[in-house]
Structures are given as structure tokens and as C-alpha cells.
Image (tube, rainbow, N blue to C red; front, side, top):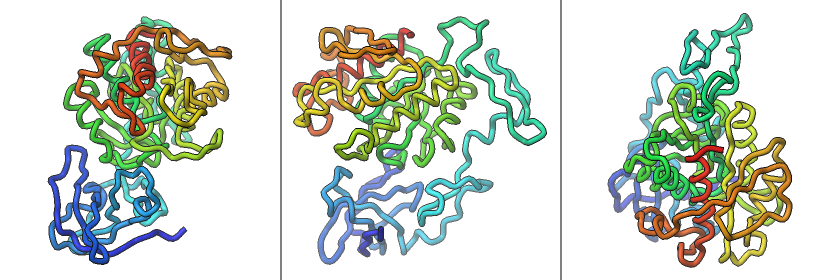
Length: 369
């Protein structure tokens, strides 16, 4: 259980990315090692700084980007003041706990009406009433019902967002980052690119994930609620950050966060589209065709969702209560988009069905259930 920490000296630094991450080089035990500083959490590093880095992921050869993580900057990181007025902790009761201003604190504290949905003030117990569905009521057109796209791998985010933008330009599409992969919101370069290109309007981090560009939420369901009610997103893309926690077991992997996200969205009355994880190039049989990650989530869901598939690729052996529409997708168009075209070390040309399935999810989200 003990942290694998080493002390070192910063010898090279890069500028902080738009997401708030700084690439550095640290000398540890006379060896140069690449490292990453989450500036929002531990502050900036400069050459000569005395730092403590967590080296465990690199020493275990895990897919962590091949860099150590700055745990604390002993030279300039001991004077942090936190966020004024913040009192809700993330990474709570760990040595990296920090207070944030969650978006949920703004909801339910006043009587207001947004798009036909009433926010009731707190009752005598202090709890605000919950109005569902968040995406509309029986008197509103179906086209305005909130749609939630749930995915299990961060590599699916870009093709989903691109496909939505290609199909229906102008939809307000946002990303709610959940558990299941990297927790720092700063760790994804593609999020910054999607925001810059207007394919995402905002980025929130939910639950243990932290450092969202546009806010923090205590829970996934609170994030979906806020994104639809207050921020006015038409489409909420809900999934983990880069990397995935995993094992070869049926349930012990980060992809199971999709089950929780889908149930949260269903409970709020949203239309839910589950992105299929598919592959023709994965060496692991359990991920070829339709991945067991997706099939397991589909089997365990307590209500029906839509799971779109790229046309002429695969037919579910057990469709069950879910809808499995077949959609035409533009893989060549995505290939020239300039967005990421690698997954698990494989290129789009080596495993096109992975990207095709994510594009089908985006097309379904853009055009409705």
C-alpha cells in the first residue's frame, strides 16, 4: 500500500498545456526521468526545484504515458492557499485531498425555471426536490430531450464528438469525465483540442476525477443534471479519462464505470446511447468483435438503451431489450480530421472498426434515438 516515492531535481521544463499539465525532466538517483506536474494540484516547476515524484506506474511498466508524477514540489509548492470558499473535498482523506467548488452547490438554492423545468427550493429538511426528466417534460418536443452518450475508453471521445459535429453542427456537446481511467482533467490533450475546435463546449470532472476545465461535480448524476439544466448541453458525453484500470475479469475493469453512468442518465430521464467497444485487431479474444466490456454493461443494465453499430460489421447474438441500430459512418473523413487515430497502440488503418463504432455512437446522438 505504501507510495513509491523518490526525491529528485528538476532539470528541464516545458510550458504548461492548456489543460494545466507541465512536462518536465527530473534527475532521480543520477538518472534523467520524464515526469508530469499537474499544475492545478501541485503548482508549476522550474529548473533546480526539489521535488518528490511517484515512480510506481513507470517501474511497473503500466500505460501511464511513460512519465513519473510530481507528488509535491518542496521548493515552491508548500505555500498553496487553495480555492477561496471551497469546502468540498476531492481525493478526500488521501494526502492529495483538495477542496473544490462543486457545481451542485448552485442548484436547488433558488426557485427558477429553465426551459420548462422547475428548480424547487430546499424543503424543511434542507434537501432540494429533484425534477425529472432533466431533458424535458411531456409538453416539450422530443428533439429537446437530453441525450447522454456513455463510453468506456477515452479513445472513443474524439470520434464521437467529431461525428456529432459533422452530422448536426451547432449542438452543444460537453464532456463529463468520470472514474475508470486517469483522474486529472489536465491529463488529456485531446480534450483541449476538441474544445479549441468547438467540438466540445465544456469539460466537467465528476466524482474522484478532478480539474475539469469548466467545473467540478461531486457525482456523475449531479454532473449530468447540471450540464443539462444549467449549462444547456444538448449532448452529454460521459466517460473516463485516458488509460483504463483493468484485469482480465468480467467486472474488474474501468469500463464498468459506463454502467454507473448509464444508470445515472436513465434515472434522470435522458436518452442513453452506449458506445460499443469493438475491435478486429486486438490480440485478446475477449475484445474482438464486440468487447466483453460492452456486452457485460449491456447485460447488467436495468433498462433499455441504444447501442449503435457501424453498418455491415457485426450483428448481436443476443439483442435483448436494447436497440442495436446499424449506421453508416465516415471512417475516411475522420481519418483526415487531424484528431487522434490510434487506440491501444494500433492505428485507424489497423483497427478501423474501433473508430467506426465510436462514429456510429456520435451519429446516433446527433440524430436522436
